Length: 296
Image (cartoon, rainbow, N blue to C red; front, top):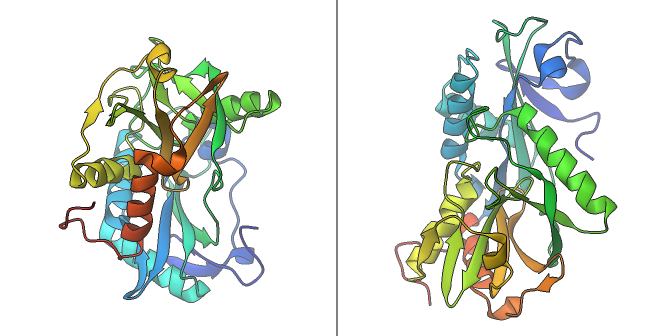
């Protein structure tokens, strides 16, 4: 699904066939989750292949490395240029891109001095599919923000997401929604959440979430439409009286939520603000939408 015998990857400054690559089984990343990654998407446009918000994603990768004291040598621009070359070598025009910075062999609990940079890509549709989702409040909470850097995209954080997804699917739901340590709405396992109520949008405050690049894009698109976006603490009771809700993320893009446990959002997706922003986002990533013009 992710590669074949002809797949080319980027590893430590070189382009290699994936079958020529290996990982040290004593890697600190493998044993302790000390690694950082990004999820990025490329789209075919009339002007050629566009890596959407590529610089912003690689800037966050650099930020995440700094938070874990991983000595990344490459700059954001160098990695972005390498990724365009990677897409060309694999003849991809629409693709999901996964950069990963991982460590060498080290069983200590100090970040390893050896740092490896791996970038791969594959063709992948929207992560959560294209139909409306049936979601449940997870019994797992997002980690206390004072326990780590929750705004960094750290590989080890995602065991929390895996636990939430496994539990939700075992109970027959499509996806989970996690709360923060205070019982407020936080985010999905791999996506941010927006709530519509009386023509306004609400989304959880930064501080207990990974503030996504797609989240920021959707806020900008909403403001372009004159839609008020309010960042605030959102209780479960508020969420279960909302008109509609949706997830946003690079892999998920914009996807509507049908139900939350026993609550069905009453506003039809086709009439919701989320659907309008889904349409705008779909055009934007393909360079068919100009944010300087007000949408209607």
